[in-house]
Image (cartoon, rainbow, N blue to C red; front, top):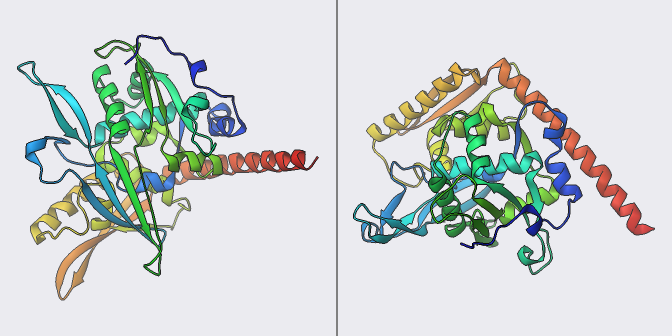
Length: 365
C-alpha cells in the first residue's frame, strides 16, 4: 500500500488501436456491453463452495484440480489459493487460504465492464513484459466497481472488493494442455491479475484507486481480437449457476435461432462451473441432487426469457444412470440478443482487420 496518489496517466502508455477496438461496442450502442473471452468464460476458474476460505490446519492440500475438454483439447487445471491476512473476532491477525469464488467473479466482471467501456489501458514500461509484448490492464476506483455492481442488483463493501482483487492477484491458475498424441504438453501458471496496485485508506474506502494487469490469455485475446461482446446487465444479473449457464450460452451458442438447440451433460456443466470435478465419484443420490441444481438454474433462465424450455435425458451405463444430458431451447429474446452480438462482433473484427492491413501497408512504405 502506498500513500502516493495514483492516476490513470501513471499507467497508460498510449491509446492504441487495440484498446480503442475493445471499447468500440459501447461507443456505438446505448446499452451496457462487456467483452469476454470464450475459453476463460467456460473453463473452471472459480471454486463454487459455500466457504471459499480455510485455515492452514483445515486442509490436506491447498491445490484444487479439475480436468476438462474444450474444442477437442484436454486440459488439466489447478487452482492454488491466495494466502491472505485476516483479523479474527479477538482482533488477532491470522493467515488463511482463500480460493477465487463467486465474490471474485462478480468483481472481475465489473472490472471487465469498465475495461470494455473505454477503461482498457496498455501498460507502460514498468508493467510491460520482458519480451515487449503488450500488457493490458484497467485503472478504476472502488466506487466505480460498486456503481457497476449496482446496475445488476449486486453490492460489495469496499473491503470485500479490495480483498477480492488481492485474492485474484495472489492466487494462481495453472492450465496444462495435452495434445491428441498425448506427448506434447503446454503449461503455464498465472494469477487472474498478475500485478495490482492499490492506493487509499488502510481500511477499504470507496475513493480508493486500483490498477490491475490482465491474465496472459486475456492479453493475447485482446491482441488477436478473440473476444466477444455480451449484454452486461442481462447476464450478470443472474446468480450462481444460472449466470454461468447464461454466459456459456452467450459464448458458445452463437448460432442460436428458432429450431436450434445446445446440449451439455450435467457432470460436464458442474465440472466447468467449478463445483464438482468430473473425476470425483458420486452416488446416485448426489447425481440426483446435481440434476436438481441444474433444473433450478434452468428454470430461472426460463423465467428471465433466456430459455424457451429445456429437457433432461438420463444417460445410462450398464443399466445405471450415470449422468444427465440437458438440451437448451433458446427463447426468441435470447436469439435476438445473440444476433445483435454477432453483428457487433463482426463490426469489431472488420474494423480491426482494416486497421491491421493499413499498418502493414504503412510498414511497406
